Image 1 (cartoon, rainbow, N blue to C red):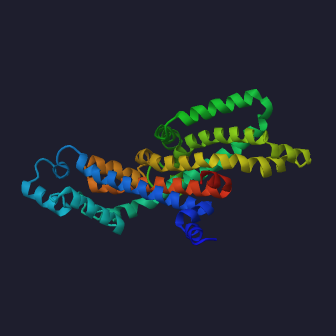
Image 2 (cartoon, rainbow, N blue to C red):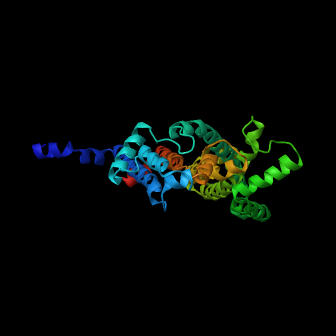
Image 3 (spheres, rainbow, N blue to C red):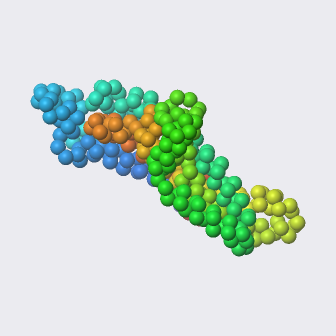
Length: 332
């Protein structure tokens, strides 16, 4: 090996070409950093793209001019825009998101108090989505393969389409009327114990579960026609072993991408559902902050929601790469 060849072999680009996993990690990290920078910049611009004076809007038209000026100075809004942007970047990196215009509490403290309730709601809803969609979709795929049970296929497609089209907050209002107001079985609103989780979780989960079940069924039908499943049948393996051990893992691998997107949608969907059920999470916080023109809190919540979506997408990419390493090599 010549000196030039040895030097070329040791360059970072050469090492990444020889190691697709390293190239995958560098590429995904770069995308995440760029996306986070765009998110932070967009959240910073929220305060500056609002028509008029946001401080005046938050304090009200009768607030003295001296109070408005003092508040603008305390927020740093009287300094050049580039200085404000650099200070905002530094604050985001250090966890200092400013203070609420209404309560004067640190935004990071408000988010820390409200974030657990939103995460509980979104994660529980996601577990319910998976618990409903995977067995129902896979079961319907097995039952309707080869054009069998046309009536069952039509009923499943119709029901899943209707449930997937109904907005979650509409389901929430309907659940409150039926199970809380009419029957009195469950609490109307609030986060008061295990029973209070049932209605908001179901309101969030039913639509995405119907959508995911349709995808799992289609992928299950595709898996059941694949060569490796035909080979398993030729070995006279039991039907349950063929379906669960060979067809289902292949179907789930193809459905994980949609599952990750659904988790991102569930996090965003908590905004409306939390307001229906008076849930003390970030969703109700951002709505009340918008109504009260408390823009630092709005900025902080937007950052959290956006970062959550980006991290979920990254997690989906990592899981897919582990389940199907060939995709990493092809992409490289």
